Amino acid sequence: MAERLIGIIGGSGLYEMDGLEILREERVRTPFGDPSDRYILGRLAGRPVAFLARHGRGHSLMPSELNFRANIFGFKLLGAEWILSASAVGSMKEEVKPLDILIPDQFFDRTNGRAGTFFGNGLIVHVSVADPTCHVLGDVLYRAGRQVGATMHKGGTYLCIEGPQFSTRAESRIYRSWGVDVIGMTNLQEAKLAREAEICYATMALITDYDVWHETEDDVSVDSVVAILRQNAATARAVLRAAVTMIPAERSCACAHALRDAIITAREKVPAGVKRELAPIVGKYLGE
Image (cartoon, rainbow, N blue to C red):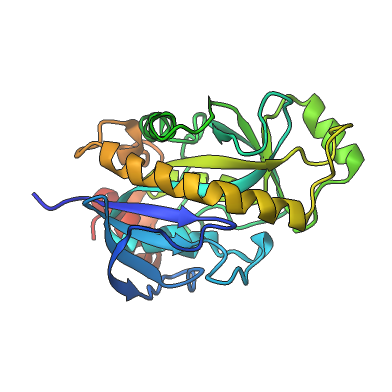
């Protein structure tokens, strides 16, 4: 049986993977345009992986410019069944400190009009994202972090804002009153699209700051974020190397058949062109 591909999305400060045995780079074309960069395919800790720099190598794309649909669809075309993501975030809880890692299992959307679905144009699909991350993959990341000695927090809500600006002080205080755990700019669309693509998805939120709500800590800035990122980039890579060895050979979670009961459009009414473009996702339900 062929080994299943594991996708890795590197966020701010994580543009490459130490220890990755690179076999090739591949530029993938999708119906939704170009992904953020070329995918780097190889082996990490003996497992086949495809790595993508979320913001492009050199960090040339801001959160609002990311083509989330192309990024996730590209992983689907490559055959990825899991995606491990890493991203820099601010903490909204005193006990979740800079340099810690939190594995969120919920999201709250404060973005503005980002493309967050593959569907439409005659094919209507309502996928459940009540639990938007894969619990199996989340457990893997948490255990991997503990194994390498990182300070880990399991579960929590990731508030996704539009950016690219950091929060105002008023916004930060209101967000904190909502009970969210971390604040970032990228992961919500990835999670929803991965679910639509029937790819398992989990992310590790790398804590860099306390946003601007904390009374005794410095306000978040690019300088402070980059300084912390340099410190925890090595930890993040170690977690990912450990995590890929823990991912099971076969999937037993519901992510693998998320579309099974989600397609509402009558099969005979789906436009042929839409069916053809989305065949990597819906082909097994609508026919190739």
